[in-house]
Structure formats: structure tokens, C-alpha cells
Amino acid sequence: MKVIPLSEGSFSIDKTKLFVPFDTESDDLQKRAVGSLLVEVQPFVVITSEDVLLLDAGLGFEKDGKLQLHQNLANAGINPGDVTKVLMSHLHKDHAGGISREIDNGNARELSFPNATYYIQKKEFEYAFEKGSPSYLTEDFDCLKQASNVKWLDGDGVIDSYIKYQVTGAHCPYHQAFWIVDGGETVFFGADVAPQLQQMKSKFVAKYDFDGKLCMELRQKWWQQGNDEGWTFLFYHDVKTPVYSNK
Image 1: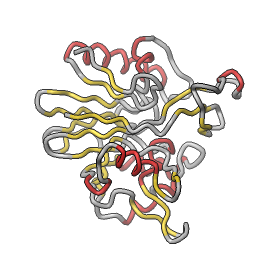
Image 2: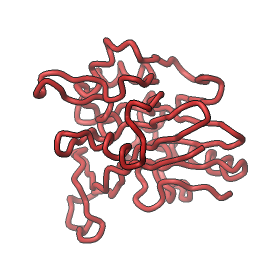
Image 3: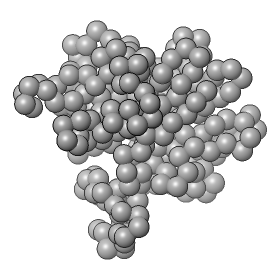
């Protein structure tokens, strides 16, 4: 398998849930609001023997009229129309902003990957509309309601015999993780339950998680199992190490 990080840049985030661009060369985190965290926003493409998979969809920013996610794909030599599956861990705004894009001068939205099938937990979708902002921007994915290329998932399962998904909860109630097994390799995407390499190596409970204790326990379990079995870990919010394997 081929893994390609699609970084949208570094950001600081505080209790306002606003993502503020951060230049790691010149900005000082201490000068941001108290309690600010430094994170990368980094979807991934995984190219397997069967598919071009997109794992989460970033913030949905545009530059010069082009979706940043589309430009990042083009920079990697991938036509956005070639993406066959979009695997969504959850629908927080930093993961779901690129699900769709504005058209008709902002009067409508269309799916950013019309040729792909979107895989989304149905209860996460429903919860997003119940919860709303600031964590969820439902206008980014409201068009999924009418889309024919959505597979609504209910609990745990397997897609096409080689992509395992599991509802972990922990970060938000219906968050899910993915294991992609192809050609004897396993790529693991724990999204915001396992967002950074350093978090896998330390034991702590984060206040921003729905169930911080469960997050901690899952990270410990996955870290041990993944290292024993040679998984390739993908870290969505890691500034320095988006992809890790001890192989």
C-alpha cells in the first residue's frame, strides 16, 4: 500500500474550537490563548490494490477558487475524480469540511468527491445535527442526506473484505477507527482517539474527549497490538510524524 499525507497546515486551537493558522517557524504558542494546543490537520490517501481511499476530509479551505484538498491530491499526482472511497472517522469540522464544496456563488454545495462512495456512521451523522456548532458545521455535509453514493454504517463491520471499521466512541460518541489490510500490510487510522504519536506513548486523560479515560485505554491497547503486529499508524493531528511504523 502507498500512504500519502495531505497536510493542510499547522493550527492552534483553544476552547473556542477555532483553528488559527500557525507558522511553526515564526509563531509562538505561548502567545496564543491560554490552553491552546498545536495540531496539524492532515487527511490521508491510501492507495491499495483495489482502491484510492481518502481518510477524512480536512477543513475544506479553498485557495484561488480551488479546494485545498483537491490541490493537495493533484500535488501528489492524484486526480480527485479517481478517489473511490471516502472513509470518515467522524464529522467534526476539521475532519468533515472537505466533504463538500460551495458552488453557484455560494448558494449551493456539492460533494467534493462525486465518484467516490462515502462511508459514514449513521448515528454520528444524526448526532452532529443534534449537537451542532462549534464542533460540527452541518452545512458542510447536509448534502449527504440526498446523495446516492453514501453508505450509512451501523456499528462495526468490514468493507469489501479488507477494510475493518469499529465504533470506538471515546473522542465523540460515534467516532470510528479503520484498519486497512492489503498485501500482508495493515494500515491503522485511529483519527482523534489516536491523533499524535506522542499520545500513544504517554498515559493521560484529555478533557476535550467525550470519554478521555476510554481514549487513553484504547491508545495503550492499539499501541501494544500495533507494534506487535507491525501496523502502520496514521496520525491526523501530528505536526512532526504523520506516519509511523516500527517495521
